[in-house]
Length: 160
Image (cartoon, rainbow, N blue to C red; front, side):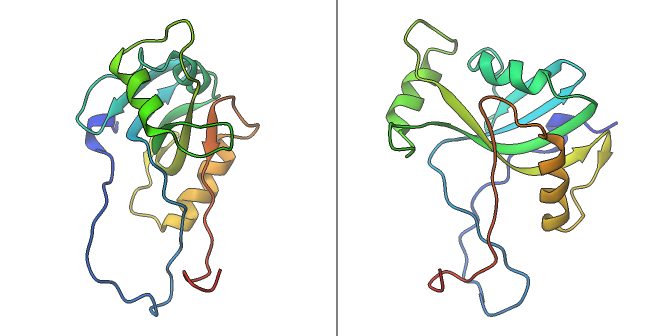
């Protein structure tokens, strides 16, 4: 059975790319904390990119993930705090995460999920990303509070 530690968060890979090749998809870049999550029938693990257990840091997200029916799922995403205009506020996120718990007056967080790696106990990480994203959208239907399924677009940058 797959385990969360088998799927570290995928980090930025800076290298020259040929965007004229077919098959590229594009997503908006977020400014947050990269996190992977495993959830299965109410049991939830949330891990930072350094492997820290972050489930108690963000209990509202842990609760939302725990309410998802079925399982086992492993997803990759990014935790964010949004300002009043919907932009990432990294300073508020750091303040929230630094305390390693929820507290009175804590800034609300949102977990932006962009990849499904394990679907109902099956490792699908080698399937095409577009297929995984379609399956991810089904996992979070109906929508869960605090969870944003990140969509993608196919147009090349500069053509948008």
